[in-house]
Length: 81
Image (tube, rainbow, N blue to C red; front, side, top):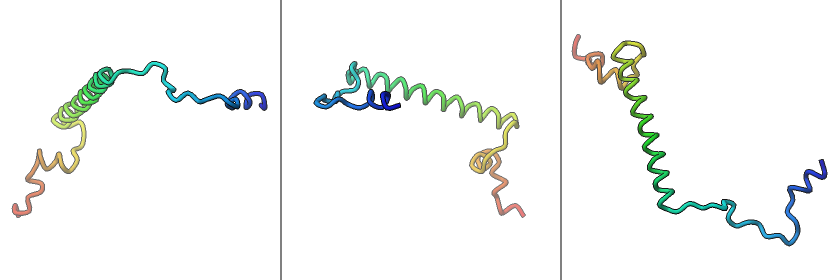
């Protein structure tokens, strides 16, 4: 155990690497990756939203209050009686 702990300690006089990533990416590469990542996240969210709408229309899932107000506003109308 002592030998393993010694291997993880820095040697005296050594300078830590200021850039731990030896292959930095350019700003354009980063922005392209970020756009792709955001597009993927947006596509997943849109897919989940449309799936939920289909399930509600089919009566497979229970609506929350906001969805109930959109689909069945008469439930919230106090002037019926």
